Amino acid sequence: MTEEVIRTDAVVVGAGPVGLFAVFELGLVDVKAHVVDILDRAGGQCTELYPEKPIYDIPGLTVVTGQELSDRLMDQIKPFGAEFHFGQRVESLERLGDEGFRLTTDAGTTLECKILVIAAGGGSFTPKRPPLPGIEAYEGTSVFYSVRKMEHFRGRDVLIVGGGDSALDWTLNLQPVAKSLTLIHRRAEFRASPDSVNKMFALVENGDVSFKLGQVTKLHGTDGKLSSVTVKGADGASFEQKAEVLLPFFGLTMKLGPVADWGLNLEENLIPVDTARFETSEPRIFAIGDINTYPGKLKLILSGFHEAALMAQAAYKYVYPDKKLIFQYTTSSSSLQKKLGVL
Amino acid sequence: MARITFIEPDGTPRIVEAEPGMTVMEAAVKNNIRGIAAECGGACACATCHVYVDEAWREATGHPEAMEEDMLDFAFDVREASRLSCQIKVTDALDGLIVRVPEKQF
Ligand SMILES: Cc1cc2nc3c(=O)[nH]c(=O)nc-3n(C[C@H](O)[C@H](O)[C@H](O)COP(=O)(O)OP(=O)(O)OC[C@H]3O[C@@H](n4cnc5c(N)ncnc54)[C@H](O)[C@@H]3O)c2cc1C
Ligand code: FES
Image 1: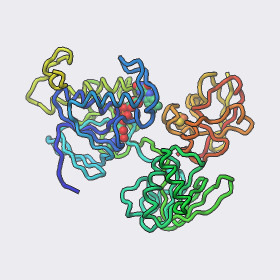
Image 2: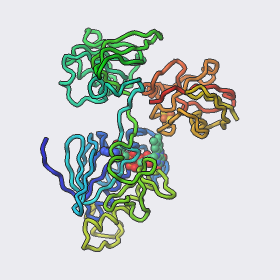
Image 3: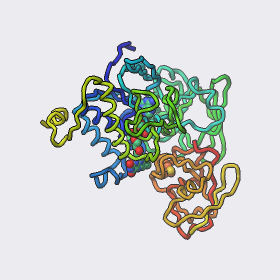
C-alpha cells in the first residue's frame, strides 16, 4: 500500500444523488472535490435500490429512472473532474486543526481536505447478516460477506449461499482454489446472469461444484471455527453440510457505519445541521441529503440538491477566506460557463 | 375496508383496518406492526417486509411474480407461504386476511 496522501479542497462521503450534485455546486465555486463510496458505482439508493423505477418529482424531468438520474448527474458534473474512489468505505476522521481533516478508507487511501461533506444518505451499504444464532463469533474467521483475498480460501471446504451474481461469481472464481465448493440456494432459479448460471451447472455436471437446494438454519463449530451447518432442504427435512468457510450473499442493507464514530452530534442516527449552511455542530463539516436532520426536513432528492447549493456557498468561504463570492447565474455568467466547458 | 390480522413474532395478534388500494406492508407500517421493517418503502427492493400468509388465504393473495420471487432470495427462512407484504394489494376480498410476521427480517 502506498503511503501517498491525496490533498484536495473537499471530500464528499457518498456518491448518492446528493453527493454527486454537491460536486456540481462546489465546482461552480472552484472547490475541488474527491468522492468516496463503498459501492462500486455512483447513484446511492437510486442505483442500488431502484435503478429501473420511475421518479416523478425531479423538477423539470417529468419522469426519470433511478439509473437515468444517476447517469445524468454524472454527465452534468463531468466538467469539474472530480475523482471517484469507489468500492471504499471511509473509516476514520482525524482533525488537523485549521488545516482541515484527514480521512482514511478501508482500502488504505488517505485523503486530506479543507472541508468535509457528509452525503452518506441512509448509511453505507453493507452486506446483510443472516440472523443465524451465534454467527458473529465466526465472522472474519469462517464467515465472510465479501472476498478480499482468494488465497484465503485455498484448500478449504467452502460453502456459498445465495442465488444472485455475487453468489454465482464467487462460486465460479473460488472453485479452482477451494478444496470443495458447495452452493446452496433456496430454489433452482437464479437472479444471476444466465451465463454464470450455465457455467455453474457445467461445473456441477463435472463434479467440481456441488449444488443443493435449501436454506441454512444453524452453524456448528468451536472458537470461531466452523465445521458444518444444518440445512433445511427443499422437502423440509434437514441435513448437515460440511463447511469450513461460509459466504452468505443476501444483498445489502444500509447501516450508518463509521460515520457514527466521528464524534459528531447525532439525533437518531441523523446529523443535525443548520439550514443556512447545512453545517454540522463542527465548523467545516457539512451534512447534506438523507443523512441530515433539521426542522421540516424531507428526505427528498430535491431537498438534497438545495442543501448542496447552500453548503457550497459556505464551503467557499473556508477554502477562499480572502475572496468574496459573487452571486452568478449559469445562464449569463461567462466565468461559470467556462467552468462548465460550454463557452 | 378490509380487516387484516398480523401475528407479531411473539405471537400477539394485531387486527388493523386497511383501505383497498394500499398494500399489506403499508397497513403494517401505518399501524406500527412489529417486525415489518420495509426499508425500501415498498419498491420490492429490500425483502424486509416478509410475511407468511395463513394457509386459508394463500389462494386469495395469489402467488409472487418473478421480481418478488427474486427478492425473496434475500429474505430469511423463506417458506411456501412466504410473500413480500408490499406486493400484496389490499382488496375487499382480503377482509379477514391473516399473516404471520417472521421472527427475523435480517
Ligand atoms: C424505493 C425508493 C424510492 C424513492 N423514490 C424517491 C422519489 O420518487 N423522489 C425522491 O425525491 N426521493 C426518492 N427516494 C429517496 C431518495 O432515493 C433519497 O432521498 C436519496 O437517494 C438520498 O440521496 P443521498 O445522496 O443523500 O444518499 P444515498 O442515496 O443514500 O447515498 C449515500 C451513499 O453514501 C455511501 N456511504 C455512506 N457512508 C459511507 C462511508 N462511510 N464510506 C463510503 N461510502 C459511504 C453509501 O454507500 C451510499 O451510496 C426513494 C428511495 C427509495 C428507497
Ligand atoms: S418494503 Fe422493501 S421489499 Fe417490500
